[in-house]
Amino acid sequence: MASNQQVKLLGVKGSPFVARAEIALKLKGVQYEFIHESLSNKSDLLLKNNPVHKKVPVLLHNDKPVCESLVIVEYIDEAWTGSTILPSDPYHRAQARFWSKFVDDKVFPAVFKAATNPNEKEREQGGEELRESLKILENELKGKFFNGDSIGLVDIAALFIAFWLPIIQEAVGLDLYNSEKYPKLDKWGQEIMNHHVVKEVLPDRDPLLAFFKGRFRSNTPSK
Amino acid sequence: MAGEVVLLDTWASMFGMRVRIALAEKGVKYEYKEENVKNKSPLLLQMNPIHKKVPVLIHNGKPICESAIIVQYIDEVWKDKSPLLPSDPYERAQARFWVDFIDKKVYETWRRMWLSKGEEHETAKKELLDIFKLLEGTLGDKPFYGGDSFGFLDVGLIPFSSWFYTFETYGHFKMEAECPKLMAWVKRCVQSKESVSKTLPDEKKVYEHIVALEKATTGA
Image 1 (cartoon, rainbow over the protein chains, first blue to last red):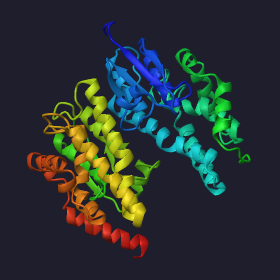
Image 2 (spheres, one colour; image 1 turned 90 degrees about the vertical axis):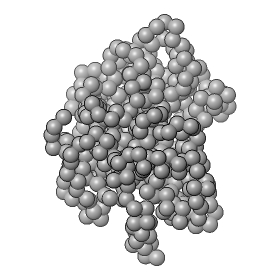
Image 3 (cartoon, rainbow over the protein chains, first blue to last red; image 1 turned 180 degrees about the vertical axis):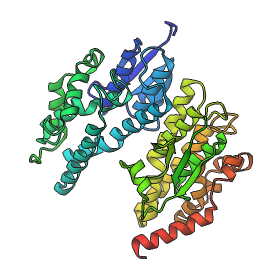
Image 4 (cartoon, rainbow over the protein chains, first blue to last red; image 1 turned 30 degrees about the horizontal axis):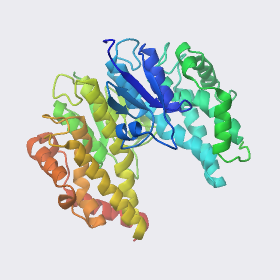
């Protein structure tokens, strides 16, 4: 691709969704400008380019916006040549899309329910849902990464489990996800967090822990 | 690309309709199996153990689940006829964004309108209309969402038109008055695409089905 491409990423450094876009850009060796947004004071640039959801990340490629993290990652995979983030075979591509959607539709909501719902019964229900989703992913993981020997769409989507979930657990006093119950996921988590591109993108742990402690209510640990 | 194609579906599912339309666009022969959601077949539970939902496409014995994912799969496998996703990556991203938007918003908002009364019902009704107006705005002056040809977003949205009579009757509004350009697009799809006219069920039948479902659910 020509060097006069202008690529900007609107985001916040602690967001797992923004991290997905950054990892994809770096895997492709794309130069980009990171524009720090304030979620409590959204810029005109953000509101203009994502009027529907008003959320980060937003990718601006020559000023044209792409929104929604998984849509952005697929776009980056198609717009730039280089290491392939999605598999080339249609069936495996469908599987990759299915599992990354599973993370968004099942894992995230369960975590937030378990960690933040003011009702104790709801939190327990969230914990159950999370345990079930993690068990499914644990069974699904067959190799070093969900994508095989190299990281792909599902790994990028599921990074939330490896890095953010333990921090959220520590912040609110939960222990639903650990290495004893999910040894394969735990091993995968170590591998992916050690990946040279992922390492560059992951935010610092301590400020994130402080952020989650402040944002989420503390509750008694679940079994 | 030859091979055995089976579709597990229910006749009124707008998500299943997406798959049927895509298969028809590509001229793919398949076996249709109607599921009973109150008594799910062993095949469905085996092929979609995670969500236990329809539609499920089974191609050469291998399952593909989630309608938007299935339609993209169909487009990629049977790529020599009637392309559904545009060829330009940016346009593809836009189509995917809007199908994702439909999936996040439409059904959930309809359900809230359907199952609530009073102020909550009115709020959901306004939200549902805002969603369709936004989608109508996205169409602009193009004949189809895909531009000159019927594409992924057209496939993604058109099945909901068979539920418009249901939405209108429960919500006490008329789509023709609220979204005339969208209704013109619906008419265009139905009149020019056999895949659409042959797939969409009768909207009054859909309404009767929902009324019966509501009685069964609420005992009303």
